[in-house]
Length: 311
Image (cartoon, rainbow, N blue to C red; front, side, top):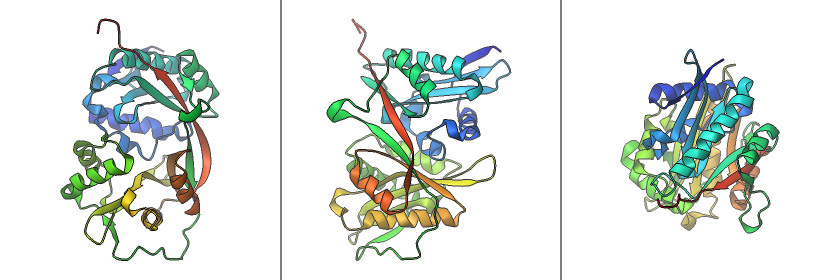
């Protein structure tokens, strides 16, 4: 079989990319939350996206340098892993080197991989990526957690004067962006990115939650996603979620998370996922206290890139 490589061409490709991921859920980390990642400003740089097809145009693999996450996202048909995976890494490695020093470039890129995916790990190491699980102070691993039990009937109380409601569409996007940036201490979230999430066909306004303080300020957010697999099973995911530092330790995170879980389960989600870093102790403890349990451990592989001499 001849494998063809081509550039990204828009929304039709996005749909096919998502379908490829959903077809092989055990092989991929990001499934339910793809609409969020597919809305990022990485797509303002189509040269950082690549697709692989067979001679009939059937999509076999895709890869994207996700600029705001500093991560390389990709997916492929597992039947052709030994052919496709090295090609994906070769393209990503070369592209990451080309764009160092440009607005979409980074001095380092990361690839998340399940600890059980030994073949992927071998290919990553052969391409020069190294695991960050034991590198001292900056060690980095992640976990995927799942919630699949019925919610407790015990009502979670909100701090006095706070309310939880859906985001008021585009009118509140700017305020959301300010909150998101404050929570994660990063300017990666943009108005354009957040507006694109509202336009995704998978977006459900009732699952895009914010908590409002007594003085009317946005204090927390919990964005929930739903997806149906080929067997008709509905899953949910929390991505992203955060509480402003000024309003932490009030029980606000637990309250908005519980409301998100309730709404996902009411729409048929029987399993709900969330992904977090191992070092985020507060977030990890919150998810565990809400009934989430670790189901997969993820390693983070890193490769550094230097500008070409004379660039």
